[in-house]
Image (cartoon, rainbow, N blue to C red; front, side):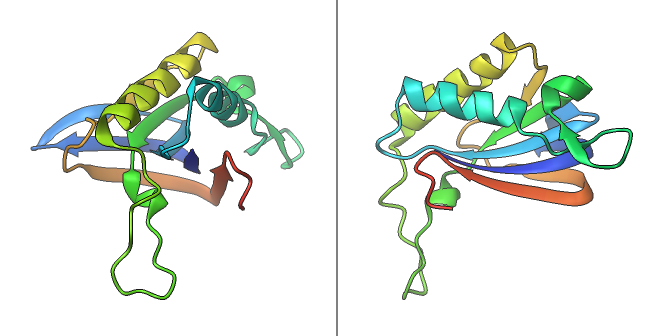
Length: 149
């Protein structure tokens, strides 16, 4: 599983001119599901996202987590995070999970965040979405369940 986390002051997703998910301060989470991901992978990734200390404390140091600041999450499924463009002009998505598995694990990820006490907004799985956000810092962090980066 791969995630791109962006610390935001606000973010929203629009599908067909309709806002499907919107948050104030918190994290924009672009989530890619890989072929080998499981429920255990989901639980670990949700915990990492919720507890990653990338919000500033009173001294301006990144010492607070999403849970600490009581922020929200906007989770958007993005299979293109598994795009492999090494030596090619067209990315291969062979490592991405098939849609049925990806949807189930994406929804499970959102539920795991909710169980941790985080308010979660979402996009629509497999829809063409427009994502708008204000990245604060800017702070952008990449997470990979296989620790490849």
